[in-house]
Length: 231
Image 1: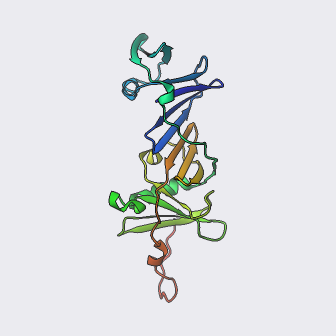
Image 2: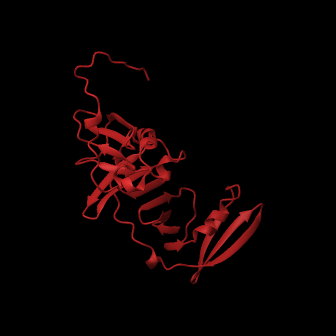
Image 3: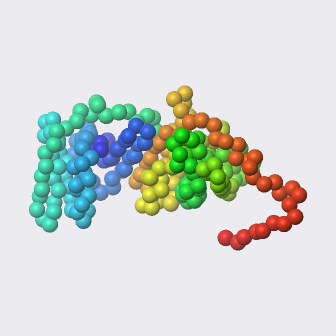
């Protein structure tokens, strides 16, 4: 995890190249400028405590010192540092706009998405923006047997829409419900940005063409009976 100080603000960043997650700290004391890269196993060990005591990260030449206070006692570990130049670039920032109701609808759709990696184009929640009217976006998910959609959203997505992968972070209950959403499309593929509270999450969109899901929906023309359910 990369901890970086920029203009007095401290941010933590982690990435597996397909996903990048940034957390902005409010209550952190930072001195100087620059970055410290901490091996994840060290941070994982820090998570075993109550989480209320301070943690100090310091540069000492090429080494990193991690000090954790437990029950009033300082526990210090020193690990080899990583050159910040070796940290992979995360790409340009993506402009986001309000996306009311997106996260709740995404989580309702996700259980219907395929988990078969050989059918990558349906291992996602598709954002279809071909609709008309105020609610321009329909979220769709299918595993080839079941299909569900939600068409009551207005989202800042244009063009041909975007296919959002099903990820553990977006399903995490600790993420604030109201988020901002942005999509960037380049020759290297699409990227999605979800911003919520202190968190900023960027993930590669699923490449390919989503199946024509509208062709399997029953037409209301000629239907003799229709059932309408309350919320």
